[in-house]
Image (tube, rainbow, N blue to C red; front, side, top):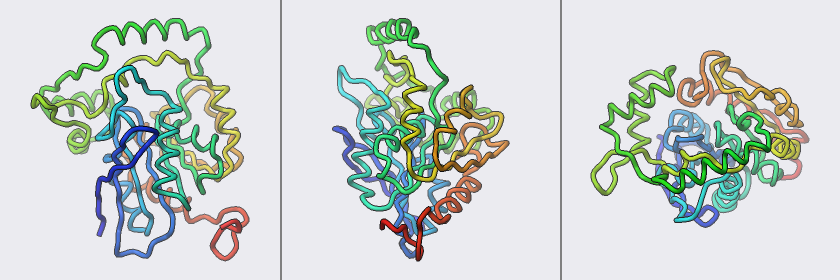
Length: 302
């Protein structure tokens, strides 16, 4: 029987909500799987992937990243950057998964997982990146326009929560951004991605500050430097032609020393929503594959 509890843990200075999925009837595998959501998402929407992983005996944790879901938001004057997410992951791993870890990241969460994995390459046993290789390359000259846009947004109502007309309105907005996802599933997801605020209004669970333009252009070269430092086996999962693919995706993938690749041609970008069973199967096969230097079912360094 799968249990789903929400616990609190400390990130890099903020209190984070962590969805904990387990099956106490199964023999523990010893592996902790951490599922890291993407932009405007939350840990709760991993549930259909988490259940089969928990049934395999893994401890499955899905944090709400800072400013998303039920996690704490940055205070006045704060902001959100990829290194902040990586720092939160480092703190969560140290507290919740000190031994064997498989890190799985989707989209923005995949990029944050790559930053963490490149900076601390021995902190995990395996890395899974689901369409999470970062945004397209950005020339440094974009810093001017991005900084202006950022300052303009901060001078306005950047953190004002705009109420939704109701759950149907939330479903309609999700359907506009995710037309490949069935409406009945979007209604379930919408309930997990919204909350009622102190004024009784239905609003999204994320900090509206996330919708502003970051002043710092994404450095593809710097990101690839981190990818080259990743030492563990890496599984890259993409959702086919309708997914998100930066133009230099092959160059980024070539940075990984031990790369495995699976494509779900009809899944689109939100693979964990549209193909959860297939994704879970792919993850379990990847987790069960022998590591380099394994003897007797355990890594030689264990």
